Length: 232
Length: 271
Image (cartoon, rainbow over all chains, first blue to last red; front, side, top):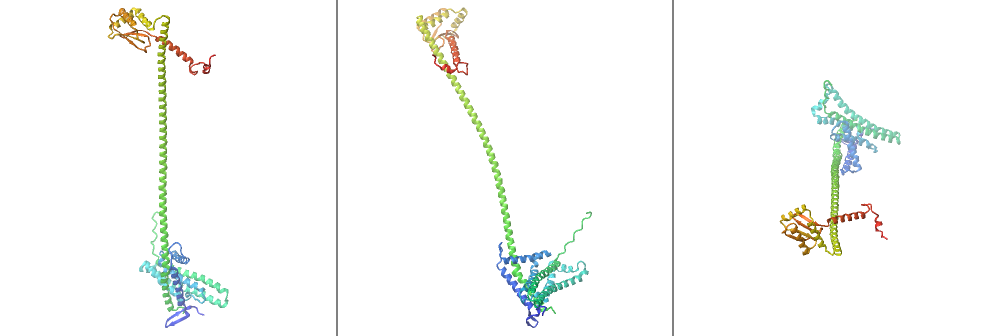
């Protein structure tokens, strides 16, 4: 019994190793990239278009709309990062219906890697939007005494991101594995369906939280509302 | 330890590669297609708006033209009506004038015809009177009309009262032109001599006398000298004859002009 697909080693040379996490990730990357390439090879700009193109357009515009609803005024600027986060986590969860597959998001290494990416991306987008000084100044809002708390918040939320996703995905896969040994027939199927749902929810939560963090970092300081005129 | 740092690094790289791959093969083409389609739809909508605006403009222009055409037609119709009315008035006036002229012409013609008839009747009457008188005189007294006329003239010259005699004598003596005797017929030489003798003896001895024949003369014989004239004529007889004939015509005239007998009665043959 293993907790993480990291433990399934396929090949190793020194500290370089190819485990199931990396292999399944590559598989997902291949499916996503090649599938996108195949569908977007013949895109129609006319009023009529194929069902697959419709599906991708709904997906992309849906992600774009969600990003805009979080409060990011230029959603296309963040679509590559946030959209890929969502698609990767969602695809990893969806693929659990394939027997023998273990989601790479069930590995704490993968979720840590994604959380680290968010940890780097948030200040990167913040600096790109407000400049270095403006971004660093936001750590001392509303007073400089908040600086340590802001720093702690930054680290803890990254940790929370990683652990939340890992816990949910790993537990889902593990519950199915355990139930398969106890009640081999109907119950695991129900749990797999539930796992799909929680996987979608986790993908949504992960990418939305990342979007919220980026929105918080890039939110430009708006001028305070003007004082009401005396006598009114 | 659940975290394998090599795997973490590899997954970071994998994730970044996936970001690039999806950007390259998914987001950009899809967004490009969407933008292209939206641009096309916007262009089509703008084109439709432009066409609608053009159609609206055309419709307004057409409406204006229609209204102008209606007004023009109404104006033309009114103008034509006025002209037709004026033309009708003019034609009626012309017809009335023509009728009046025709009536006047007919009245004149009738009057002229009546005058001519009157003249002819008068002339015929005179001729008849003379003819009757001449025949009567010849039959009963063995004398000609000419002789009687001259005799009557001579009688009048002789039996003039003094005042008239003096006036006529003065007229004969002061006349620059010769005295003129006009008669409806040629006078025989004996009568001419008789008249000359009477004038020479009774008024002035050497007055030249001229004789003329005037067939239409109503009176039988007229002696004129310097504005004075002595005549015997039948004008009085003619006037009384005219009166008698007029009264007779009036009695025999149409029923609506006089209370005469019914035409059917007059047309009935006498037993």
